[in-house]
Length: 179
Image 1 (cartoon, one colour):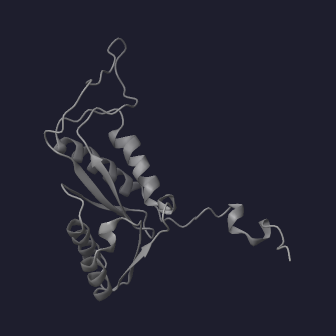
Image 2 (cartoon, helix red, strand yellow; image 1 turned 120 degrees about the horizontal axis):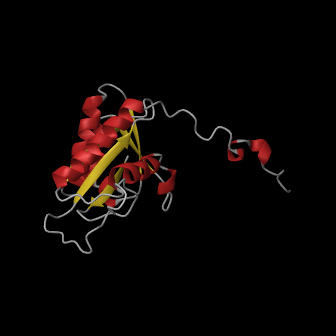
């Protein structure tokens, strides 16, 4: 799981279909009159589906609330959540709740967020739901994100092939140890 954002209401570069002779124009400037939003998301490797919430703040309280929704989604199972080293993930209240509710929080190494599979899903979300848009309200932007995630979840397949053909997974690809 990870956080995605901030979700500003700003014109975003990208490709957009337009009839010939009607070029797509972006606003030159924008203001944050309506603040920013943040997406907290989790990727279920067993199904390939994304679970998410969009919130106005990105604190440990929102993170803990999302953890509780995940716990309710899979009652009785032990949950392993791969996280980056963001401060709210390490808050004592979050750690205590996780220990009491059979949730193991697995932190990635510093500067290793690229190891988290959800990062590639967030890149696709940015490409297909946000690039080439100019949403005027958070409700409009949230609807575009929700539509993409619904589509993604309908197409989802288990994440079972962890670079199976990569030479890094084979011990035979490494040179012999020098004594």
